[in-house]
View (tube, rainbow, N blue to C red):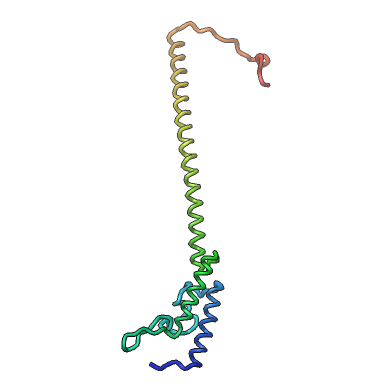
Length: 165
């Protein structure tokens, strides 16, 4: 594998910094995230340069662009802590969480309303049943020949005393 020349490394670092600014400003490619994979793709470099390496003797050495990866992750953390969400998917998740909470509140309110209306319906049906039983009892009393006095009808006369008309 060929080693990077200083010119290639400088060009790649400039491309990585430009891609970093693009991502941090929220200008992500379709399907991209605020991560090193997207950063490497936009800059046109391999991801392996962002991670530490090992020498042949097993001692660690930094990757060619590891300092830029650390800077990128630090800046992303700073923006998130400041409340500026860089990743549109994070913003969508937050928006959906808020919508979910609002819908749960509405469902709870509707459940309470349904419960109240069900109780009202039960009370109304029981009152109607009691009134129906009273009417049936009175009709049965009349049919059995119980003494019933007829009330005068208001046909052709004015409304009785105390009417609202």
